[in-house]
Length: 73
Image (cartoon, rainbow, N blue to C red; front, top):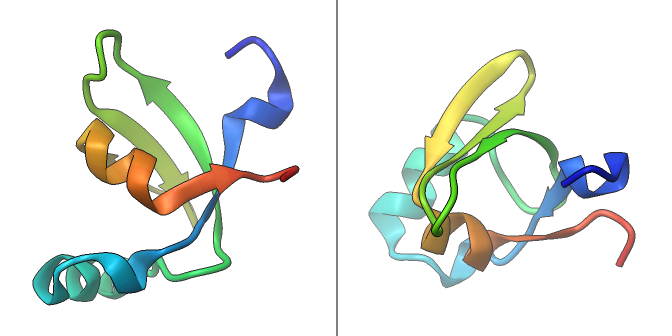
């Protein structure tokens, strides 16, 4: 992740998640179309720390990968 554009992702597909998970993400301010910044991505598909509106949120990698797309796609 040495490229600055790869440090940002757009939240998408939250509607595909289980209702409690989607509701919790929405409560944190994450919804479709929001751009987040990747703060830290741990190796071997470990957790990913993202930042949105000056708050940092840790997500399991499978969840992160299922709800984000590159910002330039």
